[in-house]
Amino acid sequence: MQFHSLKRAGAVSALAFALAGAGCANMSDTDRRVGTGIGVGAVTGALVTGGKVGGAAVGAALGGAGGWLYDREKKKRYYYDRYGRRVYR
Image 1: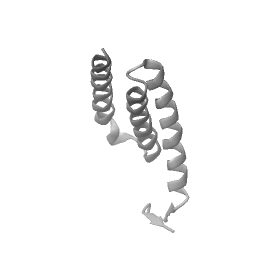
Image 2: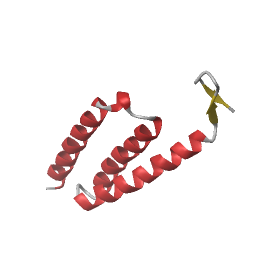
Image 3: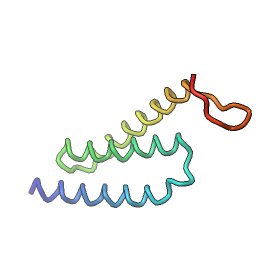
């Protein structure tokens, strides 16, 4: 029974990654980082709790928050010059 729920969680997360990956070309850096955090957090939460939906939801929320914090930290390290190029400090 445990394997079946993990298999289902893996299939759902693979579908979510495929759908999210299709639209990443027009996303900002922040959107990509938060989306990646949500995906990784959902899969991790599902694996830790044995495929329970609540665990995946909590993992997605924590992963999204982690992705947003990571984005804020990355943005402290660069700025854009007058030509629109990213310059790292």
